[in-house]
Image (cartoon, rainbow, N blue to C red; front, side, top):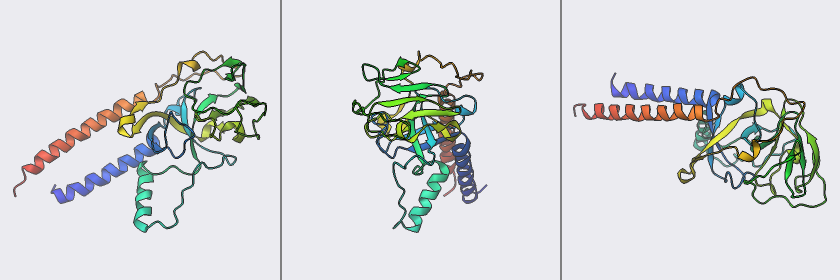
Length: 269
């Protein structure tokens, strides 16, 4: 095909593939607030695995993106007043291919408790306990003050202490790593698993911050609750199963571009 015919077709195919991947496989999210500092900073972009929770439930210590319930107050606002038509159009296209701004009801937090877990704070060292086991959380940045005020479901998020919470069936208890400013399950309640978009598994922007988002070893030995459901599906390995195909795809695209450039250089002037 002539170049002027082939190029638009390639662009349309690439756009359709990007939309399909964004919808069903992996999506990029921008961090809009400081509630996950210093694990994730404002402006960081993460890739979210959208298929991993189709075969298993979220696990403690994982960082997840989810849609907040009606009780969850937005951490940021998307003010579109004063934007030009072209700016709005570019944002719409960015949303379609997964590079737009997150919605006001999109949140990113760390899973602290799963179905049946009893989450409480605090032990004698000021640590959260899950099913009675204290958790050393090395990622916490500026913990909430340790005082005698007790918050919890329907309470407040300004204190480290909160009443014991038994995570309901089909829900997860989530908290931000920047505890002193995070509005999370302590005051806004647990989140239904069906609201979870996926697991954030790698930071891809800025380039000098590229790294995975592992689960700390402190979560390995948490005892299961008596009412916890038994897992029957194997762990897919989180983002690893997606990272390899994506890298292979990038390599293939780079090779295709090289061949396309070489062919274009051979075209008669």
